[in-house]
Length: 179
Length: 99
Image 1 (cartoon, rainbow over the protein chains, first blue to last red):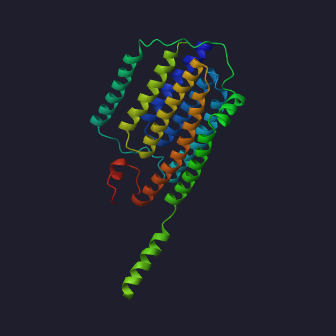
Image 2: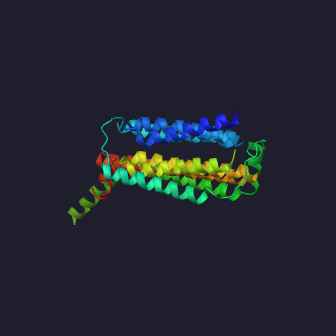
Image 3: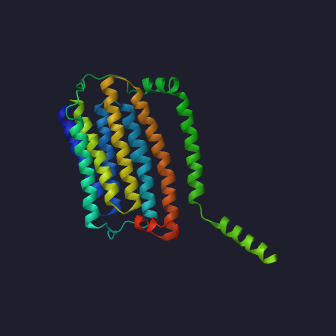
C-alpha cells in the first residue's frame, strides 16, 4: 500500500511538473502546478509531516497559486499565442537541466544512506513542532513576522498607481517655470 | 522505502524547475518554476527529517514557505508594475530596463 501510494504520487508530481513547463497556456501551467503541490503534500503525509502537508495545501495551493491566477487573469494572459524561445535555446535549457540531474544522480547513487523506517513517529504533529518553534526557533519566528510586514508594505508601494510621481513632476516643472 | 528514492524525486523536480526557467519566456511561468524548485528542496528536507527523527528540518521547511510567500507577493507586484508600463511580461522585452 505504501509503495503503491509512493509511486502514484511520484508519477503524478513529475508528470504535472512537466506539464507546468510544457503547456502553452499559462493558466494550464498554474493548474498543473497546483496538482504538483497536492502530490507533494501527499508525500508529506507519507513522511509523517502532517502539519506541513496541511500548511502546504493552505499556503501554496490555496494562497500563492490563487495570487498567480489572479495576476494572470488581470493581465489577460490566458491566450495560447505566447512567444516561445528559439528551438536552440529550448534545447540548450533542456540539456542543461538534464545534465545537472545526471551529475547529481551519479554523485549520490552510491551514497550510503539509511532506509526510512515505516513505523510512524509523531515529530510532525502540531504539538511537537509548536514546542520546537516557540522555544528553540522563537527569534527567527519573530523576525519572519517583520519580513512579512515589510513584504506587504513593499508590495503595496511597488504596485500602486503612480499619480504621486506625476504630481511631483508637475510641481517641479511649475517651480522651474516660476524661476 | 530507501531515502534515495526521495532524493531522486526531489532532484528530478528541481531539474524540471531549472529547465522551465531556462526554456520559457513568460516571467510568471519562470516565477512558478522557482516555486517548484523551492518545493523540491522542501520535500528533501522533510525526507531527511524523517530519516534522522528530528523536527528542526520541518521548522526550516516552515520558514522556507514563509520566505516564499513574501517573495511571491513582492515579485508579483513587480511583474504587475512592469506589465502596466510596457504591457508585456515577456522577459526579452523586460531585459531592457529603460522603456
